[in-house]
Length: 113
Image 1: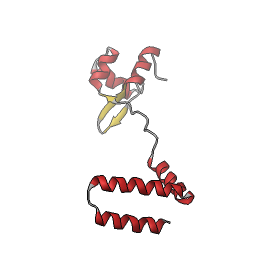
Image 2: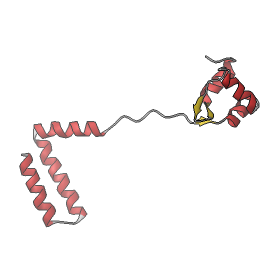
Image 3: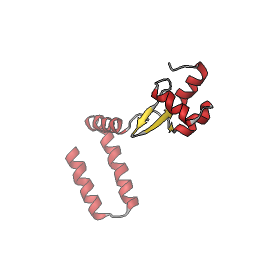
Image 4: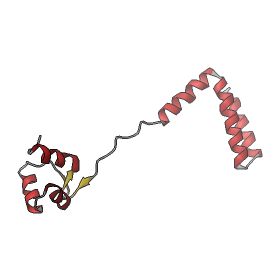
């Protein structure tokens, strides 16, 4: 069945070059392939592999100045708190970055969890 589809596909692509024709041929071939149980399983497996679950949203990181503004502190105080490990932070190269949600949690509860 698969070889017949491939031969049919090659013949039709050689004789028709327009995009609309190619699309209609592709639809026809997929319909024909779905009638075959073995090919239907392969097609479904390929589709499942191609569809990936959406990635979890990534929280953006903020810099020292924005963290200081959010917490009502000076930039120096934010840096000092990060170095003392009282503020959750990430180091990106030589700079400090903060997750807004973690800073809000610290501000609300008064200490790092």
